[in-house]
Every structure is written in C-alpha cells, then in structure tokens.
Length: 75
Image 1 (cartoon, helix red, strand yellow):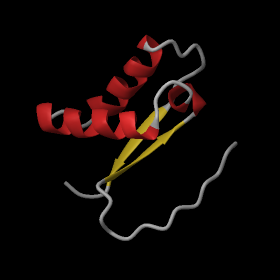
Image 2 (tube, helix red, strand yellow; image 1 turned 90 degrees about the vertical axis):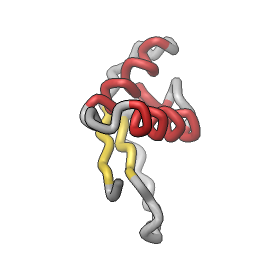
Image 3 (cartoon, rainbow, N blue to C red; image 1 turned 180 degrees about the vertical axis):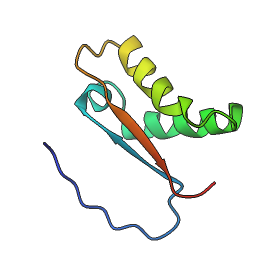
C-alpha cells in the first residue's frame, strides 16, 4: 500500500481515504470538487458522497476495486 503522512492545521473539512481504483481515475482536485458539490446539493445525505465518488470513478473507466471513505472533520 501507499502511505502518506500529511500534517493537518485544523482548516481541513474532510479526509478522503480511497484505494487506487478511485485515484487512478480522479485527481485530488476532482474528488474535492465533487465532495464539496455533494455537500452543497445534498447536505442531508453525507453518507452518499463516498458512493458518488466511487460511481464517478467507475463511470470514468476504473476497472479496479473502488473503496472510498469520507471522514468529515467539521461541517
């Protein structure tokens, strides 16, 4: 597995934990844009954001397994 250490400063809204099935097809910027858009459009369905990210990756051609967890730090 790839492991990355990132120092947080408290300004982070969420963390997206995902396998390469997501990251091979979506850039970090795309994933963040989708997440913020879903928060804005569906604030009562935060559980659906990980599913949306996985669906977008699949629709963009990912044929790997796609596991996604979105951890909300604040809203």
